[in-house]
Image (cartoon, rainbow, N blue to C red; front, top):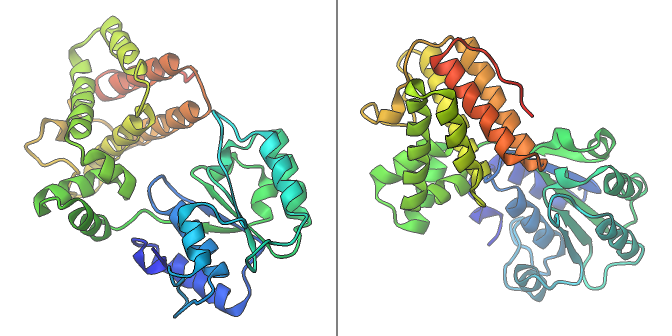
Amino acid sequence: MSFKDIPGQERTKRLLKRMARAGTLPHAVLFSGMAGVGKLRVARELAKLVNCLEPRDDESCDRCISCRKIDEGHHPDLFVIRSEGTFIKLDRIRELRERVRFRPFEGRFRVVIIENAQHLHDESGNALLKVLEEPPRANLFLLTAIEPQMLLPTIVSRCSHLRLQPLEDEVIAGELAASLKIPEAQARELTRLSGGSLDRAQWLAREEHLSHWKEIVENLRKSERSGTADVLAMAGRWAQQKEDLEQDLECVKLWVRDLLLSRVIDGYRQAFEPDDPCAVCGGEVSPDSLLTLYDRVEESIGRLRGNANKQLVMESICLNIKDVLYGKGCWNPLP
């Protein structure tokens, strides 16, 4: 794979290739954006390009020993840091500081990729900051983050910040049709439900996932006729999921966004087809209330990423959804 094989993000790719060609790459780049828009892919391809032995037309060759080692994950000058559990541990940053003291082993650059850098806690973040403030030569630091506001502001200020945009519908539909051989009509539905995230579209392409989250939205709609105890019980069952809870809430956020846009834009086409029961909800809700609900769902996702109590988060957001869509708009505080 090279830059040309990464779906979308044309502006970002052009900028990086131009800087790589001119030798003006900054020592640290922060790629931010929602999940599934290509942040890590772009970072890895930049790592390949700057160390490629036979680049052509501002693209890595994908054939030289350097490109192959990076693709296979054992290039000595590529150092990848990921969170272990909830946070990126201080020991990993200490290991990084030790490595960058020396020149690259084989390539022109040692490339450090820090995935989901929002998982740096204060101690590991401050340790990284010391490296970014006085970066050793021939080292390139590439950070990815879904929520850059969770990073220390001083880290963000030491990086060139590139914001990756949600992917366009035609890009996602084309990828689904090409990679998964999905019929055109199904690809269009998944694209509308993806919210601009290729990863989410591919996740939803599994029939059990699509059915699962439509069932969730339908249950939320049924909360109009449910008492508080039933809503809390539903939230408890939902919170017991070990996987995909964050992904579920991302889809609920898209549903709320659709309801909001259908209120303020004449002729807006919702993600769900008009005859789908998930396309409607009871009562007339003001755009301001829907916007606040959207923010609450987004806050809940952030709290799950921050290792908050799942049951309390889900109880609060389910009660908020019931209240704003079918009640009196009384907000329940998030835990």
